[in-house]
Image (cartoon, rainbow, N blue to C red; front, side, top):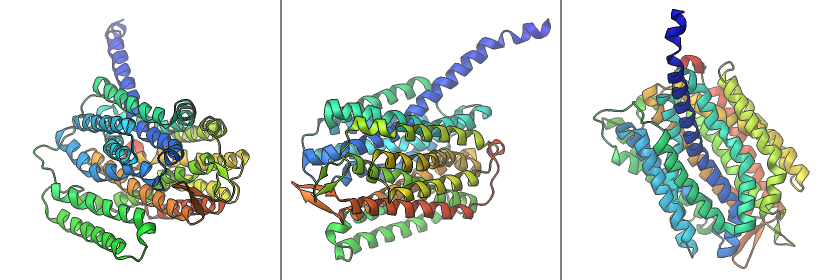
Length: 480
């Protein structure tokens, strides 16, 4: 009787606590996956944007957000440690909304790119959302919550094409841009209402402005040089000057970080083999997969024009219908991986997922001319993709302390973003070697798409080959 009397009053408290946790998970899933959804929407819309604005520089429509996001990410991560993760989440989301509005209202391509650049600051929300998960949830919630946040990419992959197909077919690329703005506004509201501030903070710390400028500037110069290399010439003085400047900036960054009292990414963390090996392998594996959309989406959405373009010419809706089984495979694989990570070595999951992406896209280099080909390629690669994206945040949790979580997530996202940008830019360059320009728009022939897929296969294979560098880490259940 006494046991019943003491237990009964706790039930409403438990229920209220569970409700709060569920709402926080929903808000964070929306925050994390909006980054993926915007990338998917941008990829679907880029063909129509290129034709509308008659530009050969369509690569920058998707890469501008990655470029600015990469530059500002180190500052956002450090600011989160100093001032609070929720505050920085809201600041990044607010700037993302401003950028989305500018892009939606743009009447010329340059203004559109400016808006996309401002919106890129939103990319900093993903690593902060993963980091805050460890801070605000009970231990038993952290693993499942992290898996759900990562596994949400399956929902984006499943619902995103249908959503983007409807928006693009019925409302054009403007409808896509306005939906981005509305979604960012919803993200701001959800975080404000349902995500508590993280109690983990670095008291009395300082912002490493010099380190951030050197790191962000160096990476930005390198990426810009890769993007412009085909226009300048790979041996031109301008290209070599940008690359040299980037290398000098990054070398000076390393030297500065060894001397400042509060470095952007503490060498004591990044020098540890479990940390740098995880960051390296996951950045290349996940970054390469993020870049594959450049090839696939142009392949299926670009029109078929004799001797000019050998895309499949699908509508957005047709693309969604054909790829829906692939999206389901990503979702199931991601959720299953989140559950398996508590019992299976994460290195095995990352290696297996990467190997499946190599197999799937390897098949796609030869078979990508029909819906059946795309499904066959996508199902194999989709399972691998779900495994990789789900295991990445879990592997970071396993090798760092709670205090290092935001910094490590930021470093991983930074590395992944750089890999994605470089591979994406190289994919555009490779595809353009076998293509044609018509009325100011770059189109691609079949050999261009084939070579673009081979590039992705090679980068995914590199990610798989790096997995053996990772030493055994504490299992997720012990790392929390």
